[in-house]
Length: 222
Image (cartoon, rainbow, N blue to C red):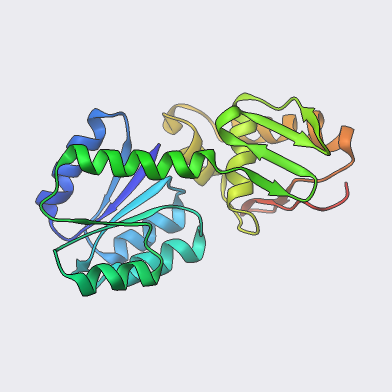
């Protein structure tokens, strides 16, 4: 699981990285909105933690950018005990709000709850049903045998449907050590999806966008 932390307080970011790394989360730090926006443009994240106030923006900017690109990615805002800040965050689309100073166990519990909720959400598009927490796919009620990394690639793209996702974004989102694998593993995974599901069912789930990446395109006849 990869988490992006956007906060201008470097000490807070370092503490968060240290704590989250203990629990096997991969964490990218950004100390301002400009860097945060860059990270979001080149990588896919499972969750974003953002400070309410940044040197060049704040919670509203974080939420707008993240939800604009990846509507279903959870965003947790970290701020002070100001009711108006909490209300403004939720109105802008935040999934949770945590008040400084907070217990690290509470933060981890909030993160795990949000990730579990997102992971367990059933994805239903027409006759195609993807059940992430069971690693199951059905089409018109019949089981489809797509497992492992191809299943994860399909699920990730389905969550970001209508969005173009690059190879690097897929690698960073799905592989624990993306730097140790080559981008062609994405091509292999997508080819397996097409051979095991698309061709037999006469559907098309993933389209290749030349030089940019891939996009979930179902429903579309093969």
